[in-house]
Image (tube, rainbow over the protein chains, first blue to last red):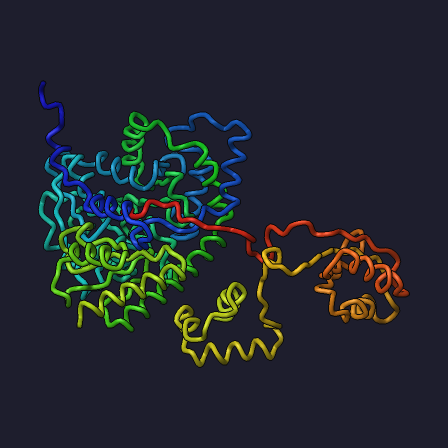
Length: 387
Length: 160
């Protein structure tokens, strides 16, 4: 029999997280700080709206781009948080999570050989999605001394005459880094000068702890060259509902909608009805969760400080990214030993790019009680390594 | 800081000052002084513990009593409310809008004692016009806490 598999797909590296996952699931009484999703349940009024939509028999496809009401609410939300106007009829598409938006956004704009600049450490799907879209990924290694922000020099160093897209993943998973307005202005200047499209993945936009999140699309001259991606998973604790969206120039959104129409048809209907309610009435709940994450963030930062573990202060998402270089072992070795010896699961920084070597991603989407227990185990481990 | 401090303390009054300071991103001194201000202003009135008595050997019976009263000249409902809340077995007294005036919650060792309280003490007060007593059969949620809740993390253990 022939080998039926695609070379492009078999050539993709499997996610570095999988191996850990298998060990942890085998292990009883292990504490995991490895989760990339909120610990909160979706606020009840949102779930209730989903249930209500089912009761009313709203079980059919929606339009390809998503419910009109939802696109309106998305447009209102971006207007009130970022002061950017998107036409809900032509510049907004509702997708199956932010992940789908990344995939179809790249496929809608890439021609074979185009280069996509991907700052790392960052979410695991940008590079494979770029490869699947026939782009050439160009990796930029972000640095701890810049608080893992993307600097103008780093970007310029990666730009070539083939560069088409810059992926801008802030607030960042796994580092928790943010980009503030003055950081974005420098990036915008280069994007405009070099005629680059920016794909801004802002899925953690509601979770920042140092001023409000600013979208690069809000900077002069950027709206027309930005695909803004966001969703409901992190801000409204709705990961399982699989709902995200993209806003951007209508020509790009139209092509994205074409792929979406053929591959997906439409995002889940129940989730869309629930999401309308989330955007209409969810601000207060989001704020409550944000405060709670911030308390945990401070708790962890303080704990690492007391432990003497080097860690830059992250101002976004729900991760801290401590440095473990003092122990002279790889992130993977550290994480494996921590899991085996103290039964705490964290994710090695290398799962998010080679330049994550020497770091760990620690999630604080856990209760303080949970974090306390985990921290006391990590402390024991660190003390043993140092002695 | 005040709002956030209160919302933490409302859920966990036993949290220590050091941890509280870390969570709020403030110094211990600031937290201490804010709490003592809140106590002085009677915003923080008391620190209680929520106990699930059903799991103990101690018998407790609770009742909600709707009370209709005649307000008194010059003092409205305050005087009669005071007459009622002075009894130590009375857990709470609320002035209520709608079909009756005061909602009284009562905790006693037995049904008989509650009956005794209502007939001997409450109904005999001059301004009390009528009472309706409802016994609590089971508490599902109290003070924002779900009784008997066991939480289990159902997320996948590691996700990107």
